[in-house]
Image (tube, rainbow, N blue to C red):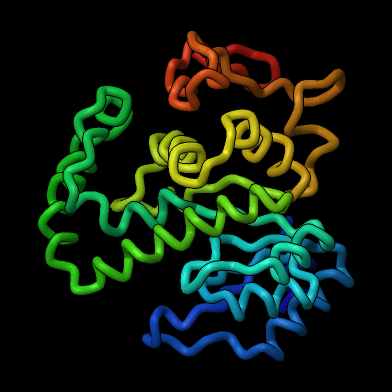
Length: 258
């Protein structure tokens, strides 16, 4: 499989190791080992969707490059943190993804925030309103809340322990996740729920992400010779991470986006 993907000139390979709370067959470990080995032979990075601690520890031991989601079944320990730090494994926690599967039942205040409303098509706003009743009746809502709590707590522990933190929201596939706004929500959750500093979050979505994707030569930091993609804000995000929402201008490759 890794060979076929390499022939198609993909940027990386992702494996999914998750039985979806017992509703799916988990990817066999020997397959994970083979994919990681073959991908690395072809100079491709491997990202792993995980949910459980045991699977995270296994793929980290096998040399995976990134955990695409945080551990959500238990608290992480020093053994995993030490191994991730030693091997420079990146974790992208996707806290907003975990929040999305129950938060509409709580009528979050941002549902009426102009920043959310103005950037969301009317039909998708209607979907957001419908999710309140759907999620309130979801028999898995308590488990979903627990997943979020574990994810936030584990991200906090990993960040404090020196693990490389990347950035992602798992949005872009429709409700209950809203691309654009959820990236800003992710930043807020990383600070307010996982104890990271605004600067740590900024470095996660810029410098660390570019390194994790292998494109740091051209992207990720403001430096001579790199692609000039950047935002101009009216307020300082180091004072409050939600100031990333005070957008004044967007520049792509050095040109102002109109």
